[in-house]
Length: 470
Image (cartoon, rainbow, N blue to C red; front, top):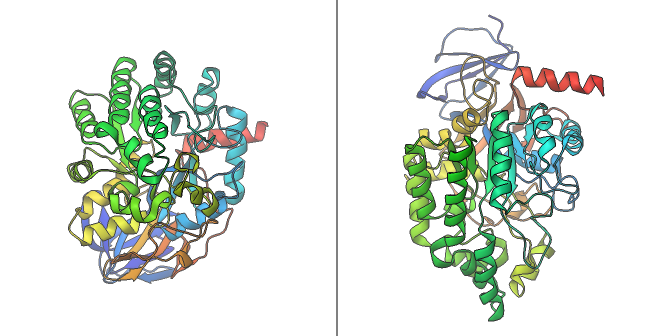
C-alpha cells in the first residue's frame, strides 16, 4: 500500500470509540488505522503523540454572507475561520442577496464556493419556489432551509424570499421535499404569537437587549414550542425528514424526544450560543453582542441534558457575523440590531473544553460535530468519520493546552468574538481536508480554491456534467 501521510501516536476517535493508533492517508482518503508503531512507509509523517486525532467538523448551519452582505464576511473569510476551527465541511444558508431560491441562484453560489473556499462545502437553498425544488436537489445539495419568521424593525437577517409562515404552504413544501429524500431545515418561529408578545415590550419602550432577550424567551419559550409542534406534526403527515434549528427550550426538546420515539424522521441542532453564551449575565454585560437569544437557566439545563442523552443530535455553529456598527445600535434599539453571533471559529474547541470540564462525553461531542451531521445529511462514508475510504478530513487537537480567545485572533471581517477574554483548555493545532493541511500551528495554509462540493461521488459527477453542458 502506498501511503501519503501517517499520523502517529495519537488517540484516534472513530465511530466505535477512541483508540491509540496510527492513521494512514492515501489519495485523500483514510487508508488505514493500525496499531501504533506499525512499520509502514509513508511520504510524510506527523507526530500526534499525546493528542487527539479527530474527524473534521461538519457544520450544517453557516452564514457566509456572500453574495450581498460581504461587508460582514464572505465565503473565503468564513472558510479561513472554518479551517482554524477544525470545520472541514460547511453548509451555507440562503438568506443572501439575492436569496438562494432556484437553480440559477444556487449555481451562482456554487461557483462562488469553487472560487473561494478553503474547506469543502455545500449549501441549503430555500424551497420557496416549488417548481425549483427538484432541480436544486439534482445539483447535489443535502438539505433545504426555511424561516418561519418575519423581522420586526429591520430587513435582515431574515430577508424576503426565505420565509414561509402559512402552514398549508409549509406542508406543500414538505410534500415536494419528501420526494427528493433530502432533509428540510426549519428555523421555528410562531410569528403571530411573537407579534403579540414583542408588541407589548415595544409599547412599554423596552427596546433594549434585556427586553429583546425576555420577549423571545417569554412564557417559557412559547414562540419556539408551538412552532416546533407544528413542524413535527407536518413532518409526520408528509413523511419529510426535518431538522430543527436553534433548539433551546425544555418543551421543544421533550417534543423532539417523543417524535423520535414515535418514528418521525427528525433531527435537531444546538448552536454555540445556547450552551456557551446565553446566560442573563451575558445579556447584561455583552448586550447585542450576545444575542442570538437568551436561554433561561432551566432551559439551558435541558439543553445540556439533551446534548448528553442524544436527543439533540447535532452541534452546528449558526455562524452569524455582523459588524460592530450593526450591533452597537442594539444597546438602545435592539429590535433594529442585526441578531446573531459569529461561532464557526471556536465552536469545536468550546465543545472539547466542555469535555475537559466533564460536561460532555468525548464520544458524544464527536458524534455531534461530525459523525451524526454527516450521516443524517447524506454524507455517511464520505465525510464526518475516520473510517476506511472516507475523506481524510482530520483535526489534531491538544486537550491539555490552556489559552485565551481574543479579538486579535478573529479571522472574520468583523474583527470581534463574543468569547473575547474567555480561557479554555483545548486547542486545535492542525486541520486537514482530504489529507491536505489547511491549518497548521496558528496559521491557515490552505488554498482558497481547494474546497470541493461535499456530496456523494454520484452527485459530484452529476454536478460536473451539468457544468459541462452549461
